[in-house]
Length: 172
Image (cartoon, rainbow, N blue to C red; front, side, top):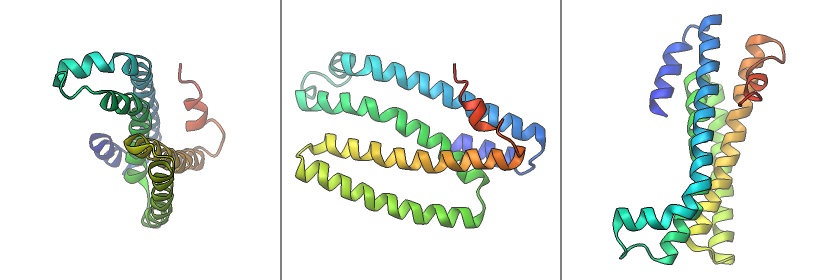
């Protein structure tokens, strides 16, 4: 995330057509890579986590509750990676006013996170799994916010529909 943020900040200080195209290509290819990697983790992680956990930390720590938590965490990773990519882009090109607006939304998202954490942990008794699910919900809100910003950024540059969203739809 930090490397991407620094790369994009340096690249997009000069918003020439070549730099914008390269930034879009990097963003799309990195998103594609992380989505494919996350898909593999989501498919193979929950079923193989018990073996991997016993191999890495021994049978003492590989209890059922830890395994259940690792299985839920496997579904959290795609949201974490996508949020990192999108927020790195946002932070590298956003103006001061846009960052201020983002800060206000982050306060709202934090309140929503606290509320969902309380509901999932205290009310539904999901313990650490509730915290992970609450984080997934929080990351989803952050991804939507930054994804909307990215789409608007490229639409404003290109003045048409063939922007990031069009290229993002071709993730195969």
